[in-house]
Length: 252
Image 1 (cartoon, helix red, strand yellow):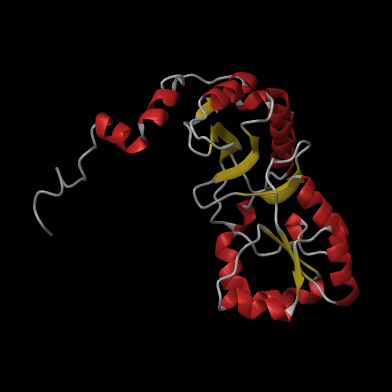
Image 2: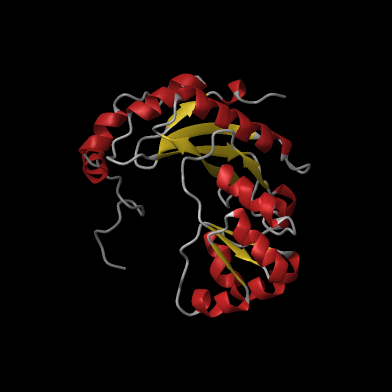
């Protein structure tokens, strides 16, 4: 291995000024308003995140929940879906796999795309992925399974736990369009969920957060040990993260 690339067997630590150059001036300025050592209350954290939004577009606000669960183990999975009272502010494109009467029902309910076997080559061979959520009737899962390797890694595979494998396609579509979000713990034990836009008021964002956290608490796996919610961080798409107090949102 070439010499000079490591210091004491480790990669050298980048100087802070280099890190800041990589971040960009607007990000660095926004980050100065956030004290990383402070655990803010919910409303204050939301206000800081809104003020720190640096992009010219209406950024999405996300919450990042560090849990005590190991997402690599099946008995410690945190997964589900919840309808946020004020939605996410994002227009969600819904693809439905259904046939005959259920296909017509899906179209009437407002699905953006409806199909069956005819959609498989388009997704598999042409790389078409112009949709955000996939819903399927149970009888279509054999067909959808053919593209599981395409949909799975992108978090698009329909799942009964999230309500996207169902005969009630009307309810599923209406909930998704109204602001239904899916949550799932990743391999690093963190759950990442969008809770709104920078343009939302603090009250609306706080209500969305309350609803989400209630659902996360109810989804606590029986096998979970120790501290369930370790930390909460809220941030915009391109802004700095703000740590806030989990206890104010956990109603247990």
